[in-house]
Length: 357
Image (cartoon, rainbow, N blue to C red; front, side, top):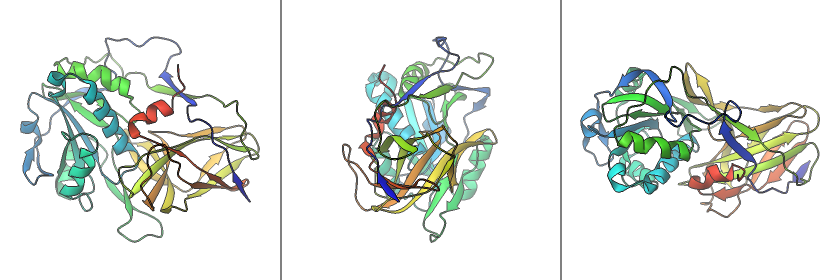
C-alpha cells in the first residue's frame, strides 16, 4: 500500500536552552568545557597541496578548530563546516585571520588531495585539509582521547561503498595552545558566533565547575492535516549536498495510532539509502547504521542534526536548493509512503528546523 503525503513547511522545531526559561550566563562559553585542558598535539601530516603540515607550528598563536571527518559524510561533516564558514564570513577580518579550521580526513582512500581541496573550498577557501597514514591517524586520535575512526561497509555493497564512523566534535585549541572547549554535533551558529570572536581575542574559557547545559529540542505539532492514516510526516528537509555521492534527509514523523516501525528507506533517484545515527560511545559521539526505527503509539520521532538521519548514496542528479527530492518510507504496519523533502542550503538548515520566534 502506497500513499502520497502532502508535506508541510519544515519550520516545526524549536531549539532552546535547558532548565526552562533560565537565561544563559553570557560570561560562559557556549562550547562544552574540557577538563583538564588538552595540550595541542605535535604531529605532521600532508596538506591538500602536498606539503608537510605541522599542526602545532602552523597554528601557533591562532585558534585551531580541529575536526576529524571525511568528505563523503552526508551529515555531521558538512554541517559543522557550513556553520563555521557562515559565522567566519560575518566576523571582522582581524578576528577571522586568527582562526583556522583544520579538517583531518578519516578516509584517505577516497579523500584525495583534489577532493579535499574542492570539498572544503565549497565552504571556505581558507579551510585546510590534511591526511596521514592509518597508524598516524590512530596515534593522534588516541592522544586526543577521541573515538577512533572505523570503516563500516554497507550491507550488500562492494568494498568501495562504505561509511566511516568518527568522532563528531570540533576541538577548539585557544591561542595559548590548550583546548578548553569542544563543540559537539548540534552546536548552533549563534553559539559559534558567541565563542569564536572571544577565542580570537585570546580569551580563555574558565571551567564553571560543570559542563554547559545541553539543548532541548521541542517539536511543535502541526495544525495542518496530512493525508494518510496514523503515520504523519511533519518535516522533511534535505540539505543541498556538495556532490552526488551522498546526501542527508531530516524528518519528523508522528504516530497517532498503534505501534509501528520504520523498516526501510529508498529513493528512485539514489543507488542506496539507509538510516544513520550519531550516538554516544565511550564519552564520544560516533556514527552508526540502524536497520529500523520503532514508533510507539502517540510518539513523535525526530531525525535531526546530531541524531538520526536518512542517508542517500549515489544520487542520479545534483539537487539544488528550492527543489524537492523523492524519498520512500516503508513501515511495518502502515506500508509505503512517497514523500518529497524540500532541498535547502546547509547554511539555512538550522533556520528551516527552528520555528520562527
